[in-house]
Length: 220
Image (cartoon, rainbow, N blue to C red; front, top):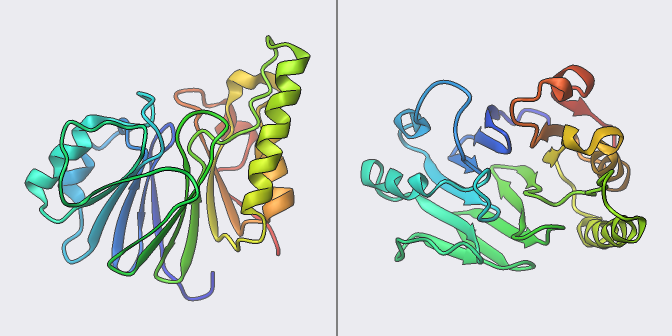
């Protein structure tokens, strides 16, 4: 990524903090693996933007809305199906295929193969993609017809993303899928070609950490 500096912190499951020159971005906060409440570590002088791809409890924790009590000026970008108790300025609810700009930060939403959205974010020369629950969910205990329908839905969504030049992608690699755990990630890498892909959505299961690299580099 040339001379662009970025710091990435894994929080838990699909949660990440991404710090660039001017922004501090939090994606799909549920809980942190260690270190306590991340809001105590927000850097001064940077715009904080919090994203939640959908309302599932392992992707969205309503506690994030209380962070603005400690740090006024936080912006929230939430999937439109999330119904936050708090409303008002700084809370943006987005359905799929929408665009938004916040203080120079560009956000575009894509769809999911579950509920909610996925996010394409451009900040300080970086293009970041957070998939939410967009994945090729090929379940071993589902019918062949259902899995074929899921495959088709997933591939249609990837076709919409194709052409985007992505530097960092956060993408599900879920060991509950057994032999299909990396099916979606491999297809995403082949079709989209991100500079880096970082796995997520594996919770406490360290299998992924051992079998799938924490981050992988792919030439474009």
